[in-house]
Length: 438
Image 1: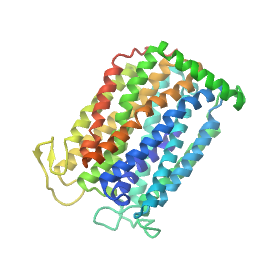
Image 2 (image 1 turned 90 degrees about the vertical axis):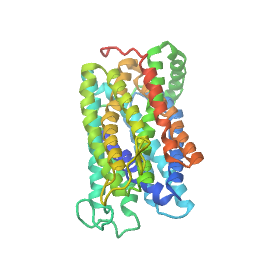
Image 3 (image 1 turned 180 degrees about the vertical axis):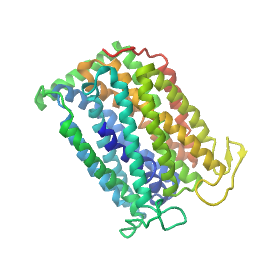
Image 4 (image 1 turned 135 degrees about the vertical axis):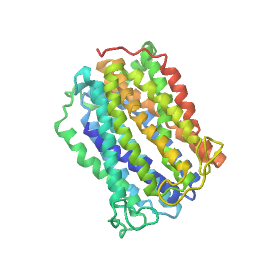
């Protein structure tokens, strides 16, 4: 569970609420261009994970041990996340360097997650898999929430003020311009190192079964056999297709939500951060409740309700801009202060529901696979799980980036989210998930 706590701040403070909007607003030439570049970088990272994770999963199943792989990719993540410090405004070279560091960090944390997920059925009673997965996601959101509070409370000033959310001078303002935003990468790396240590010290790993070189050959052969017989695992195959679609919508929705708000409402880092705190808190509550609903009603129902809810909420988010709500109702203006206008408050309310639905959809998805996949090939199937989570996930940010660049509109760019969510929900409806875990 502490792995989720350790890794989530990267997604919360870097990819969603603090660093990504800062990059789009202050490092890139303009928010639309920044959203486009960020989407293309996310696509590159997603493609790399999609193509490599099944192969590495098959090799890991042959060697048996997973923690060594998790450690290697943890190092990659720490190096990439630390490199985000160089995101100073001005010049193309820093932009290229920062986007490369982001790609490296994303590849590292995503691969580490593959091997952590594959450990899930070995560390908990089978009847408690759903609760463990949901509680871990909830703990992850709590970690992201604490990290957000630290950034907003100690490192970045509130709009129109020299003081932070906690009423103190930013502790790092003397270091460099936008030091608080730039430090989110190194902070997430340090946070990860500190809190992932208990996993390596105390969490059991399966025994070593083979040396690396023979395992590579055997793993690749086994992967070819698995892919060949995957059509015979019809329910797994349909689930992979469903997740490939709805996960793309989930990723794009969370990835670009803060960037869209920055460009639409002119939100500062502090405002996006407060928005993120609410989402993270609701995400933790949703994941915790979803884990218990998973054990009681089954993971498929939890995922279906969550994805349907997110599709509805996404339409609502797209209906809001600086001057209107529900596409056509005028509601601009507003006073001074945080979230002063009606469109901003509605966007904030809808964002809370994104948090409530997002956590259960993620946590229950991996317990669906635990119920469907052969136990002896769990890491390999979780590699395929990562593949299906990333195969169109790189296309989603790419589509957002290209649509945004072509239209010049952030709203048009992220409208593709709804298409992926609805398509994934339709395929999920055809999947038969066992009531119990073998």
